[in-house]
Image 1 (tube, rainbow, N blue to C red):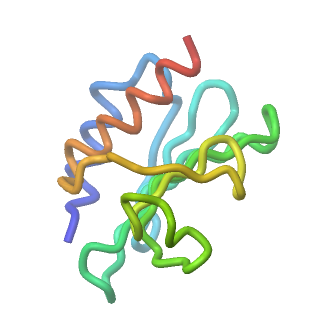
Image 2: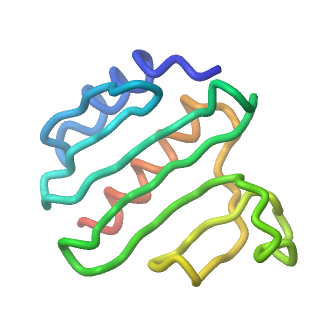
Length: 118
C-alpha cells in the first residue's frame, strides 16, 4: 500500500514550480496544477498493486493522461497489459513503463507533467 502522505510531501516539495496545492481525500492524492488542471493519484486498498495516475486537462485543452493497471480487456494487446497509458485521450492507449514503486512512479508522472507544461 502506498503512503499517500509521503507522496504528498514529494509533490509539495519537489514539484512546487508546477503545483498550487495538494490534498489527501479518502484513498486519493489530489494535486492542483498551476494551469488549472488536476492530478489524481490513487492506490487501491482492496486490490493490492492496483493504481492510477490520472491528469485531467479537460478544462484546459480536453486531454487526459493516465497510467493505470485496470485489466480492461480492450487493452489486452498492449505489451505491458494490464498496465497501460492513456496518452491524451481515453481511447489512445499505449504501453506503460511507469515504475511500480509509488515514490518513483509519482516522480516519473510529475516529471512528465513538468515536461508537457514547459
